[in-house]
Image (cartoon, rainbow, N blue to C red; front, side, top):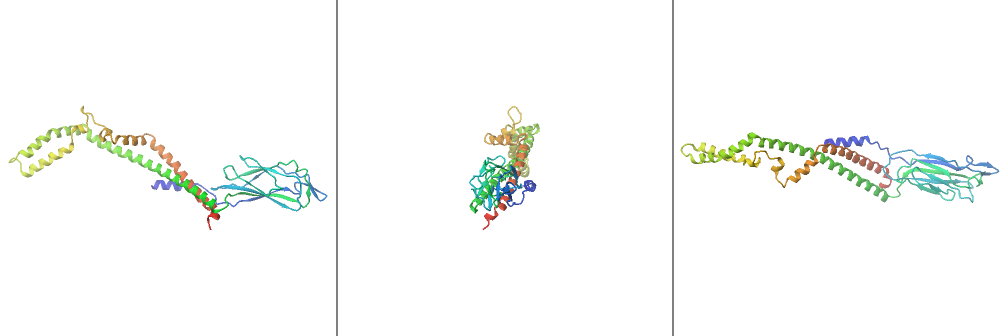
Length: 321
């Protein structure tokens, strides 16, 4: 299986998985002098601009979550329920009343990496509310942290990835065996047909017929020529008689009309279904199809191994006591 190992190693080396990335943090001002008008010791007529926030992309093998935490300093007392709407690509929007809710957690629909997020003011009261000039409100966004809280959750993820790897490896090995068995069957069938040609050609058929006709005469000569043949000569003739028996009946390899039997006819009805099934597996184009399927399966198995390795690294803080 050197070819298989070489292929898997090549595929694995072509999969570039980044090292486990630490969750990055972005800070976004909501209530501050940069978004409000300052006068008479107050912040008023605030405006939160719509903006698209982006995160650093990286490879991941585990579920991720993004957490937005409100950071508030100074006197920010207000009666108005200010809020922003948070919309990741392809994910339903989340309305976040940041003045009364300390934090909110966002997840991609598939719990994969969240590459960006649209933040939009969705409160009718932002421009009306007024705050003491000491008030500062911002969002601290922790992007794409591992969505795991304990060792049990980490272990569940690793077990699922290990099961996926086992399935992919089994599929790869089955296809590799199918490629090899198909080639082996073709070789054995070619070899068997080569022997069959030698057994059923005209010369062999004539030899079978003549051997069958000569056998009684040779037997009679070997057994009934005492005084004419020496014991050694009689023994040689007797051995020749028994060797003729190995030629078998001419009808074993030929039909009554003299035409040769096929390999399928010679092996008998019990083995015929097996030969027919194997013949289908090695039909024209089948080996090429198996080889192509094996190439895909080998790549998928290598990717599953790389994914498991990356997950182990990402989950090390929970898996290590």
